[in-house]
Length: 280
Image (cartoon, rainbow, N blue to C red; front, side, top):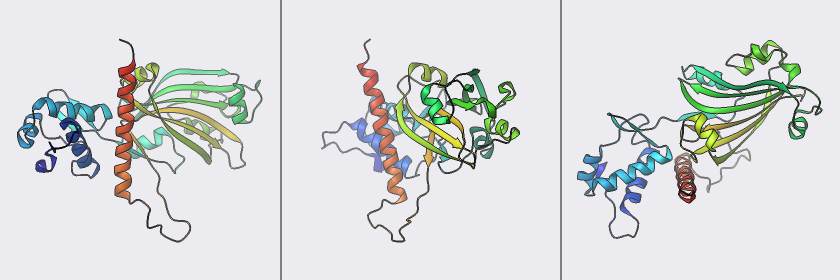
């Protein structure tokens, strides 16, 4: 494995970027498992014939992307990622339970207010209809992973103080748990406030998610806008060919994995570029 990481000195590409790409591919191909240690800087340097400074810069690149994480006094490891289905209407608490983890919340907003015109239109209520406004940081195993800001008609949540870690459990108790929904995702960079709440560097890659859910009769129940850590989450959707004919030009699952890794690299470089442009 180490021999495959020897960089090509005849190209104009910096050695550390070549090494970072080779490490990135080994991780994407599953040759270094999540949670496993990568070879030490000294071992990599000696095996591929580069300086430790070059190795360190390559590792720094992947740490900034969230692919690797340094553990003080232990070494550098492939970061564990949470694969989340994009097909099931479940909440954060239920997903944590499926993984054998404990979900918790740090509340920063829990109030009754009036909706904005945009919120009123999405929820199908008037601008004078009271809504529950809920804001919290979601943690799994004590680690902050997401920020959720939810708005719901108050009729579905008459007692907002009774909401525990699971919003959907509270909706169950009022017989108003949603049964269908629409979810939109887009890539973004963490604002200073988001970075502070999630304990990540400002400008880190995040996933912005807007979820709208409904009762069986189409009544809107929930509008939630969230920010998930891009270094810890992958949203996975399973696809099938509904035409009955296989498109020979369709990417395989392995190429999709490589494309995802490449996109993360682009996002990380964008994050780095943004940081470099900031005045000192």
